[in-house]
Length: 79
Image 1 (cartoon, rainbow, N blue to C red):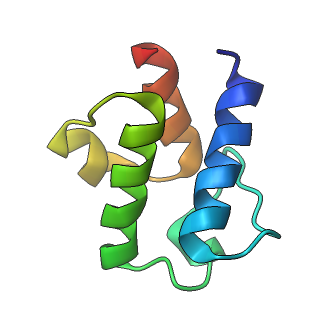
Image 2 (cartoon, one colour):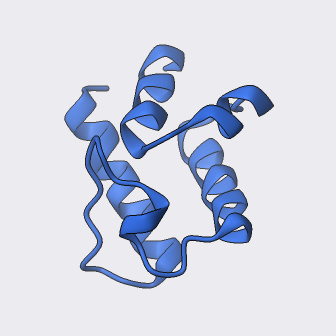
């Protein structure tokens, strides 16, 4: 899976989780960029990403992620 395909899948996940088809994430997207992305929604996003990509994040990875680009890096390493 290419990095572009990972971001396309992440777009779909974020759009579904936030019920907003206008959301498009990139390397620098953070919680500050998306309305409603709070700590509870972060957990829902992590679960949705894990399901979509058939993987599990480590707790340290989840707490250390600073943006969607770092999430994509971890996904790319695992698949």
